[in-house]
Picture (cartoon, helix red, strand yellow):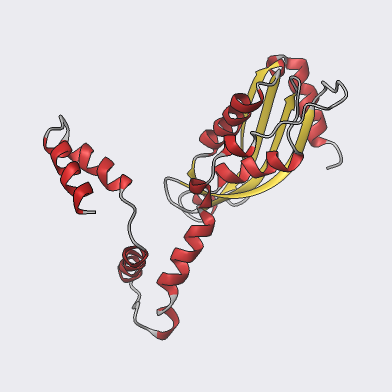
Length: 217
């Protein structure tokens, strides 16, 4: 740890923007579990609570454990999940669609949840992936601090990089707690984001995609 700090100090001293370099350095050094739990205690005190009372004694440890689960996407690689491709598909080259994939993510601006469903489709280009892999790649990017727009692009980019399909469609619908619990407090408002590439750039293909997504609802 000392070696890392000394190296980082020299880099910061020679940086054109020492403040920015310090922030970047802090990002690369992961706090210990004890430091994370202390941070939770500080937030509890800031909210007006007493971290020492019986009901909150174990809360810091529980929060840190929960964060490991809620943000496990940082430990996973979406492209790696999609890396195994099955080429024996008997010439199938039509749309593959997995719809209504439920997810929970957290807004990077307020660190409160947004919850919704993702619909992912692609046109194969010589191979397909296991259907569960599309759901898993949604989970990888959802389990991070996110904006819905970024998450939509990341899912599409991961599919593009690994499968090189003839077209990709990603549609995400979600309700953001930062809108329903705070701020304008508009419960039930839904946000939709989409990314279309390749064949899905054609209006008729987008129309077909939306029709299939809405079927049986």
